[in-house]
Image 1 (cartoon, one colour):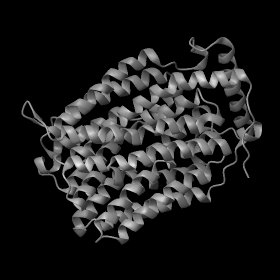
Image 2: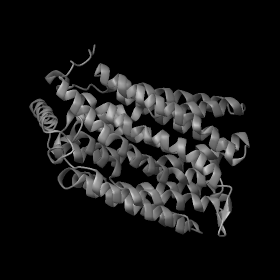
Image 3: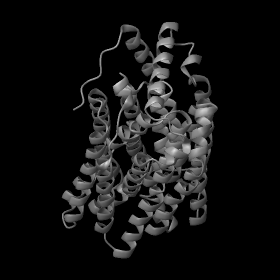
Image 4: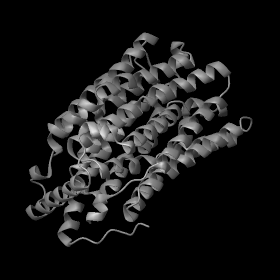
Length: 434
């Protein structure tokens, strides 16, 4: 039974509020732009494959190639954030991925598409674990799930914003360029601009935060140091030991299975909804606002309640199991388009709440370089699901000439991921310390 954590003195409340108001809106905006650039290919594919003559397998492979290069620099990049500068590294990532996204709007062949996706993955590598590590530099354990939830709310928000933008741009023809090309160009520019702003706006460590009053800064530094000491007293992992910890291995397996299902879903959802409904592109993109809204609400509520109760495991498992159930029901209703689409939209929305509480779990176990390297390892292996998931759905579509086999793959991935989380036993030394 988990009880709410004790109340804090006024200076602590002021420090937490100042940090949240300074950092969370900006990292939220950055991640919105990141995710729009990563998944805009799913909206572009409503026209791109037809224009370029791509089969489902070619599209699925191109999507997956992003993750081959993406995983190569996960661990080194995460260590750079911890040991060098999150601010400079994140800025570098944003500028480079924005440039590559713009160039993606000019591909004309499968080879060029594969190359663009490969270099986009290379540009973005370590962005996500770097952001998680950056938040651990600023937010205490009791606030971490909500901070990560705020970051992760950017994922459904990216769909909420990106879907109507895509619906508008897909119908244009400017300067002899198709609308799906303008989608890449228009969404790459903000990343470059925000990358430059990042260099001047973010602060690497609380000790460098001139914008934080002295008393609040000292309280935050002392609190983070005390939590770090508590984790070390409980179990001081080296990087090698962290990689061998059964709980870490369980998290790796769960994240890989979850991303296999989620990325198999997210990159295909616009195309699946269009094929099931036969609606025009603009109506399809409007429907995709539904899972975005569900995801935003679920992510914030689940993260808030997880922090309130100091419970992580069940708050992580239930959303992904619910998503698996929805895709399982979609598999069972292949001849009822309305029901199938409803289950797909619900399942896609439910999944989002899994992610922030998942990433709060390893912060309870590890600290410093071991944590940074392990975030990179978990995300590196998990992102291999980005190779498996989209390609598996495309392969099953081509092989079976039906959509239901892809739904079954996604459902099984989600259910297996949640089951692994339920088997974990996580001790919270920071809660004990509090």
